[in-house]
Image 1: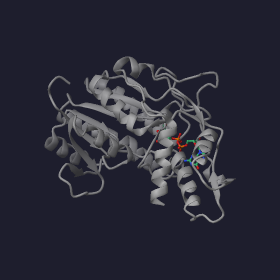
Image 2: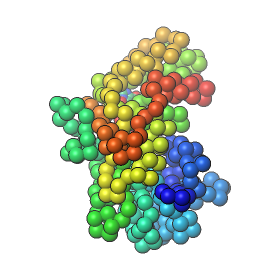
Image 3: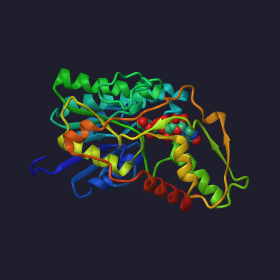
Length: 312
Ligand code: GDD
């Protein structure tokens, strides 16, 4: 970055990751954001990313050096019910953003956010997926994020733009909405411990899958490091590199409970198809930036549980 202060524009600044990134960047950058809803604050612009003209307007006002494109839809299960919405929210909005950057200032460094869901169903023999692993998405969400990675390639190859694409694996922490496994579990355990759920029964989905979880506060640090040191045109996994079975996540969270809990598998929590195992190789980001996750998974799960315990 040299001595020049980063001027960061975060799309979706009021989302789960956006809020954490804004906090992290506080003393490192001048921070601006876009949101679909007017928050009545000066540094956040109300923008629907389906309007290229509105994005151009904001780019001219903010003159960012970096854009963290976090806005989008992230719930894999929901993507089965709202397929077109996911393509609008994740793909069309990215086309509009990249077009707006192309027409305004191609030196802006853009970080596009993909997902490990892009890899989809990978060979059971593969221990960890690297950025070179073939993509094979099996959800509408995964396909929408693959499209984002292809747009990154298109705009860097065709227009020489300054874009990098990140593939975060599961990221969790305080502030995440319901609909993701750790929040769904922690919320129900908190309800049972607060005496709200009288039958003391938790509804669960597939416990057999294996995922690679990282604290969102570590993830935003990785995004910043990649914004500073990532190579344009490159894709980076962002992950811990350690798989854990959902059953084990459940066991850790239930370990925080003072109440005995009954478990019921709820068919509605199962998916049309669910990736059995997704564990990432974080070698590339480590070699490029030195980034490694700092927080222990058990501590993150405790933070999530405590947050729900105080808010149910
Ligand atoms: N949500 C949820 N709720 N998932 C459950 C539940 C439940 O009650 N019970 C079991 N699961 C299983 C899911 O079937 C899946 O195998 C696993 O827990 C993780 O589900 P999610 O937390 O919903 O995450 P995801 O892996 O589908 O996707 C997340 O990670 C991606 C990166 O790998 C999301 O955060 C995506 O936005 C992100 O890109």
